[in-house]
Structure formats: structure tokens, C-alpha cells
Length: 30
Image (cartoon, rainbow, N blue to C red; front, side):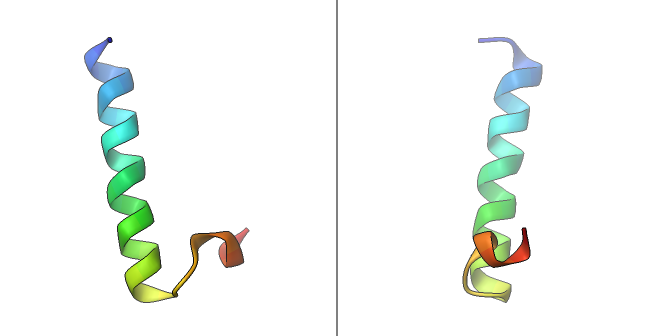
């Protein structure tokens, strides 16, 4: 897998954890 795509997935995981910790559910932000 290309490093750029892996980085994108990694960042998405971090953002998901951050949103879950901060607002409870990332889906509520959409």
C-alpha cells in the first residue's frame, strides 16, 4: 500500500479517536 494512502488511513483513525473523545460520535459532526 502506498505510504500516502497509509498515512491517510492513519490520520483518519486518529481523527476518529479525537472526535469520539471530544464529542462522543464523529457522525454527529456531519
